[in-house]
Length: 223
Ligand code: SAH
Image (cartoon, rainbow, N blue to C red; front, side, top):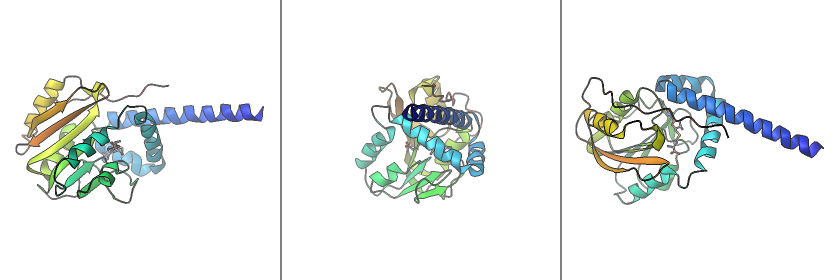
């Protein structure tokens, strides 16, 4: 009997954690990056819960997107300086020899510089590669990608891995990216889980609205 009630209790707890994760996740995708920063500053426990839920989600996938980015960077010179926007547990930094600036809202690892990705403490044109791996979460996408443009050297690489179902109109998205100063170098849309996009910085972002720059929130289903 006590075994059964313990199992029931564990299942209830799992349910509650799942619900809390989905709620936090929805807040991250439907607010600005500043709202996200405030949310986690006020409640660091929420951040850890979010990450547990995130880990559980990506474990179901055949491949972690960050591993694709690791493989890509291992083929390029280790002298390239990398900025990882929304680095999570710093898997990228731990897997390559390059210097990697790791940015996130709360430090899951001592490597992390805590900040809102819309405003990172790097000088203009100081990095060769900017990475957003499942990290384009805020509604202020233009500002966030503008920050990546600012810190990238001319000709530098922007890598984006995002959940495939978030793209409403990939063509419009890529067109908007040209306005933000990014040329599409390659796009891998073959996975049904996530898209991998590689851009090169062509110049500064042009001001003005970029209406095609839209991603659907990534809302997870209850399981
Ligand atoms: N890139 C990692 C983690 C992806 S989860 C990986 O692929 O494993 C998305 C990460 O973005 C989370 O760690 C979250 O805390 C971070 N994030 C979300 N909004 C952010 C913001 N405004 N500033 C910095 N990091 C943010």
